[in-house]
Length: 332
Image 1: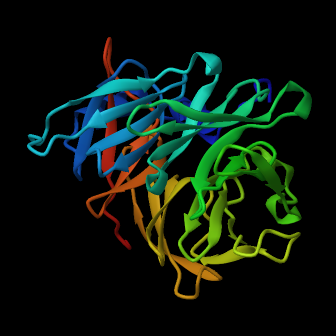
Image 2 (image 1 turned 180 degrees about the vertical axis):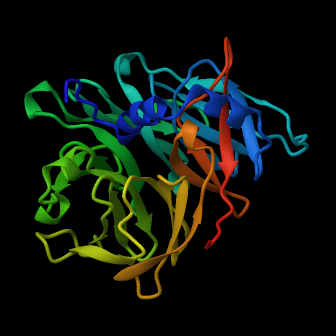
């Protein structure tokens, strides 16, 4: 590839935009949505991730050009109203890097955010911010120019406050302690498919399961992995490939647990609902949702029991209108 793109969203974005006729995009934008949508205005075309903060009654969104914002949803929200994004964080120390995956660490009242050099693959980090003051609590560099190509993409946090950050280029996971101290790297031959082209976009979306393990997806292979972290991660035996009936989950991106037995996989198509009855030793795709493909679904979140999908691309000028689309799953 002439241009090294670390993010699955970046790669898929250029593919989707080149493949979809402009007339189709216009028709889709004019059509009435099939499910509920929160539209909001922002200052930029690209929004990487969104998570619902119930205590603050707001969506928290990450900017691909760097930064964090919020989209407040008032209790008396009139349906159809276009909401407004407000910038919360523009970290000068991270200028030139994109803000990618994020996760709310509610017990510690903080937000963890991935920062990365999306196009150069020369810098990866994870930062934590206080959800009330937005003061930065720590910034931990995970890779630099001398470390080879790496690109942090998504993050989750366990019950102890440890963070786990995926490297979408190198297909590994960095573990960072509750105070920002670097702890270890989780790697496995299972994370590297035999086919070279499936390694172009590797480990991506990640979630922590309340039973004490991680679930992570490999985007281009569609493989889903279970990583047992209760007794620490060893080499191989605690990292298992989840056998998914109806898989593979190719082009899977952001993950979100709907319940201990149900997982939402954002990506292509817009989202798939995956269910397990044996503690995620095996699983099955039980339903799908197809939304606005031209906007490119990149992440999922749960608001008031409903799943909403973040979409990377906004349309309009000078204000860009973005869409958080409710995913209503069907087994058709």
